[in-house]
Picture 1 (cartoon, rainbow, N blue to C red):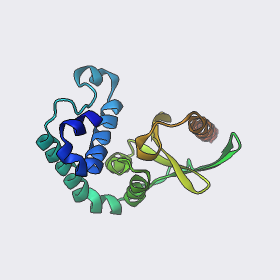
Picture 2: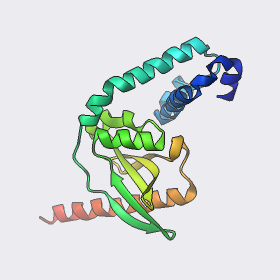
Picture 3: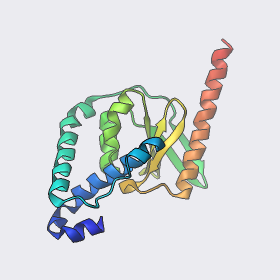
Length: 190
């Protein structure tokens, strides 16, 4: 990103929205299925003109704004996977985000694009959880609800999860898997 701003110093006053857009594009390119990665390379700013980047940034934020109202009003049922856990001497509060408003608030507080996931959440294709320590948002975690596989865990401004945070995510995921197994066993006994 530094190289882009060196080539286009006149856009430095747009660094925040350009960076937010670029980070979103990059992280979304990483999320794609591995087979798709071969067809579509990871996102980069190399070779992009300043004018085209500004157009793309404006379009991104316009689309984001247009969907904001619908996003805020949408809700979906919780999976009841919330938890309060202690891992490595740290108390974690894990809550599922079950409304567009929740996603918008998480996105704003954590400076990442989780608000864009509302259609997938509403369609039950993914579940988003906020991990907090001492009432502070620490991680946002995306889970495949069908498999309980953690797709991604991101901190502030899309930073990767730290080892201690990943330990908390894995402890929680194991806890959820145990709940699902117990529930399935109870269903089979009825």
